[in-house]
Length: 307
Ligand code: ADP
Ligand code: MG
Image (cartoon, rainbow, N blue to C red; front, side, top):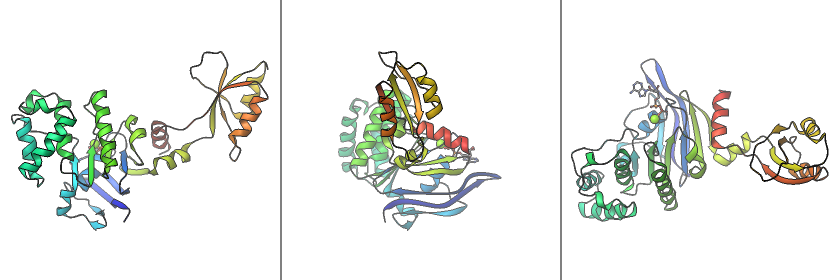
């Protein structure tokens, strides 16, 4: 079994409203899987189904090849979108309590918590009350409690919302480290910045339907347009027009120190970038030549527009 988690044709209605319509995803073992989509797409609903908080109306979920059952909960670490900690409890007390709920002994929980609190430099907070912490600080505690028992599947619902850029980066690095140690990770987001650095695989949910999925690099290949960002210094007066005609040129903007011609040039399917480059060198000095690779954000916008 190379997928740790699979959902098969999962549907969920709330009254007349279809929140998920036959959504199938496959999360390979050891991958970071991005569940992407605009607000209200159905991401949290799917995550709640995987965590057995809500039941699907139709479809099935498999964890490591087995139909999802209550005992699987111990193998999953889940950071919910709505973060909630008991406000009047102290941080340490709360963390120990939550760790024990997950089946850890108090002694083991203490050792692991000390490791994580040191690692995230939050050791000083141990005796503080939750209500004294900022939202981002409380979220760090919840992150620790989510990963503490080293579950094989980690599910983070919008893990970066509520964090400042420094802490968002720190959490991003921790997620990469958890993957390195062998965990499989699913995270949802409606913001694309984190996707490039983290995801091996993505699924894009839009209006309750999965509209795109696969390895991120394959999807990028699928969406790329054989366009090259080019800078060229040339004495030929009508070069720009010639390039417009030959390569459907579009103005490009990138920073350089010179005043060269800057264009995005599209090559025909099956034609090689070398042919373009060779052609350009007959026209002048090529100062810049880079393939335009669509970002996760471009793909997201394009795919949603196509639907
Ligand atoms: P996302 O996480 O992608 O932003 P959600 O899964 O939270 O989206 O929600 C998808 C849709 O389902 C939204 O329109 C939301 O209002 C609706 N929804 C979610 N949970 C419930 C519920 N318990 N009752 C009624 N509607 C719900
Ligand atoms: Mg959500």
